[in-house]
Length: 364
Image (cartoon, rainbow, N blue to C red; front, side, top):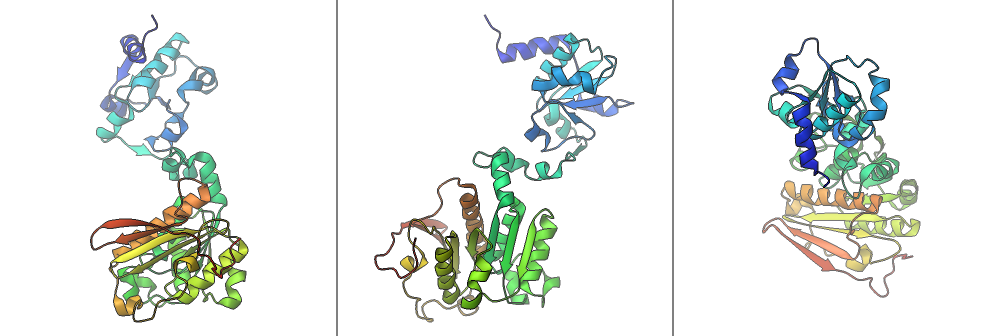
């Protein structure tokens, strides 16, 4: 009868030497530490100085890495099981000074041992994406190749810009003609007090690059108007609408549809917000939802009506999620759905929306 994995681990531990985390930290001179986990695990952090040789290739690669069988080696993994099996494998290959770290990285961290990120900084930065279903290495490359234009570096644009930069979206354009005012800082978290008086597009770009130097940020410190809309949008493959007025929302909707570019829309009012995705090839558009702008007294801007600062943070974060899903082609984007958030009650409502007959927008 074939022994189970746990039986093999138990047998290996009876035949190999294990060292505890304090014992490993005290070894002088330090041994060669070999991390036998998978690449994505290694990039979440390892013992400083450890080299990666996944267990699956350990037998074929260890000879090139360690030609001398008298070299002192300590093998590590997550919990000490794979490293025990690997230590038994190396013993069988003739390596006489091999040990396994008991309890693995879990025990090392609990003992306060020093850890470090590997030198491959991009892989370490996106390690949680690389193991995530729907993203992985291929999805991360798609994010890196994407070009996203965010209109508005205010309450909605702030979390969108920061999360897209953090996610590694390769090129991010930010359109905003305004300057940072101290009254913005209650909700526009991409800016800081030192930036008061600076153009918002430039302030936001600086914060994004500070967060992730690996992304390219293009600042457009100008107002999006009919004469500039095609020029600004045509160089991007996704648009995120974080604007705060109906004129810009309708203009973005119509221009994105004409150019065949998906559009993520969000808006807030006092304690409420909403998010939807406009696909130029299917589903309704913004004009289908709102054929006419409401009277100013029904939907006043934030300066008049007020807004709780965290509400645009919630909506902007949802917009960033939708933008990521559109780029990745993952999940169910909010196409034909208006997601409404009520911060006062903490409730979300999904409203199904259809393309409106006779809509004047340039649907494809």
